[in-house]
Length: 210
Image (cartoon, rainbow, N blue to C red; front, side, top):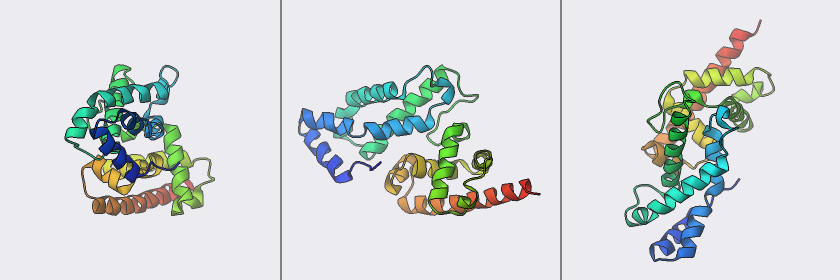
């Protein structure tokens, strides 16, 4: 799924700042699918029977609309990372309210050990498709368990960079905004995270083979 073009977003922001109500609606709605993907990646599967991700997206967009005037006056982040931050805060409240997590989530890069199994499996498949060495084991039935175990042994920032890049499909610039660091630092951490994951998967596979 292709990300909305940044130039189009910038144009809509300018028009919204000038009081164009139609541009305001377009600005929020054009990121609906990206938010739906992000929430689908993060939402605890135990809540799926009670909570529709599309409803969460709608709540996020309503909240964003209420806060948009303040954003337009003084943008704290690029637009999508700002919108995503609202979605993240909504997800934290949902998980806390339903007691779905064993520990609280109060930081943007926390909670990755609770990545749903399905999302961990999707991450493994995307890493395999990207041509990294875990592709050698992409068809192994136990890959999900190995990847989940390996992700649990990575540092929080390493895990988060991989999820943001491969599951949420964010640009390096957007990831830098989310993590509060530079784009160059994101590039370096992304490369290191892949190498560390490769090493951990290699060790796990070796330990499991006779």
